[in-house]
Length: 263
Image 1 (cartoon, one colour):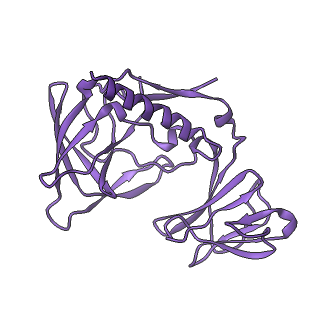
Image 2 (tube, one colour):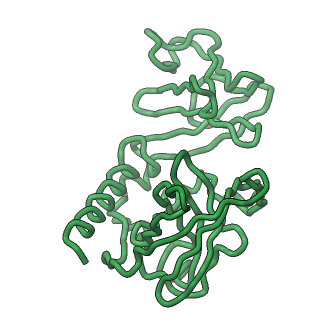
């Protein structure tokens, strides 16, 4: 183990804890409210909310105190919030509360991030295995042959099945085991959803991985020290895909994040 690698991992680990526990981080999510075309009230929020072809609509009075983006004052009438899939996505605030419209498979929802969320105020850190260089190994990425992308239907944390876009597989050897995992592209990088023999016992029921962009020959690095908890480990209102077929390793990956700690 080199000091630099261990120090880099410690900085990454500290950054993870700081990010999820920030005022509007993952621990602050208190609700994901799916919307229909007709105006409805959302418990805990003023105004009326609905979905249309452009995004999330809100009808509110100035006294309600809902402000969209960088507007000079609160909404007094109707306003549009474009979802996170739009290049010009909007957010709104209600005091310290952040309101974020999202779109998933054509359906629109409003997410509510409250700095006073009980899970955020009770957060005591993320438990993790000690850094071990043996869990950082070379990997080779091979894209799928056809159009470079496929869609796999997988269960999600909210009980629904949704398509997961996957673009290829990585091959690697770790702990004496040669394995392959199905991954997706996220910008230049590769991402994956995995489970192993520790899942649901010593660690959360599944974890995410991110790999550096592969070179021209597909070479990259799988560092399982940086296997990390999905958003739904921090708040029940996130939608997280479960591992696709073949991504459940039959040995214990004693590396990476384990569980959310509470006071």
